[in-house]
Amino acid sequence: MQGKIIKGIAGFYYVQAENESQYECKAKGIFRKDHKKPLVGDEVTIEVLDEEEKKGSITELLPRRSELFRPAVANIDQAVIVFACREPEPNFNLLDRFLVLMEKRNVPVILCFTKADLATEEFKKEVQMIYEPAGYPVCFTDYHDFEGEGHKKLFHLLSGKVTAFAGPSGVGKSTLVNHFCPEAGMDTGEVSEKIKRGKHTTRHSEIFYLGHQTFLFDTPGFSSLDVLSLEKEELELLFPEFSPYLGKCRFTGCSHISEPSCGIKGAVQNGKISQNRYESYTAFYKELNAEIGRASCRERV
Image (cartoon, rainbow, N blue to C red; front, top):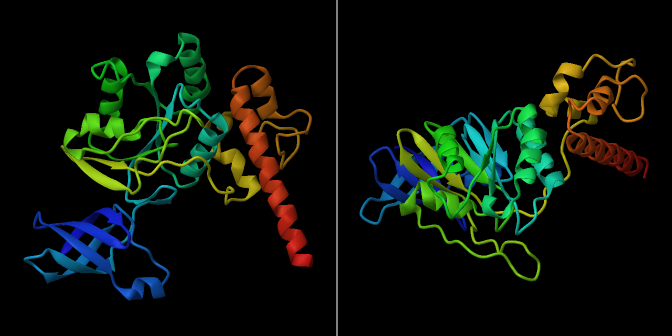
């Protein structure tokens, strides 16, 4: 029997089967041997062990069309990256790092900024000017106005898609999921007054069905991401707004950091590329370069 993993907790996987029943399953040991781990969103084959108790065993992982490891989900069409306008303050370096990881995985991204009632119009315009030219739709949502334009725009973008909600803790991912899917009943929490960050109210990934082939993943929050796992030469390709200016540099293999007559730096100076985004690029490039240096030292030792 085939089905989809809709939730995973402590080694148990809850599979929505093709017969509309839900089974609590364990994964066979062969997956550990082959270094494979089932993910929420995986299409699987299960063996029913107890029909009355709805117990089963996952016997096969079917091919994935996409997968992410932070958050750990499979078979998504797009991701909604959720940050708050205030409380906690948005970390744009973290946001850009996440966008690079999504570009590396070829996952389209929508940006959603919650708590819009706490933001100035100047802040909203600045965010739009930074990210919309890069091809990322930007939505601003307000918990005091669930019928507002921001929620309507976001719902339209979700329709007919399998979407993962991801972002730092305490920004309101679960509140958004509860709005779009009230039966989800996800726990929500307040931001810690001391550290102004969330308290990790979502502890596992879970799928919710909205109807009309629209699925939402709610995922645990994060406050940091691992070192970027890519070649430094790839980085320029993972900033979509760089694309029109690549190949316009004086030097082949230009890093867009210190070389003269650089097409990317020229676009930044002319306001075609956001200074904020360029600064994220240079920070990531230097990080990758430093990692190459550390790896070289380890090899010599």
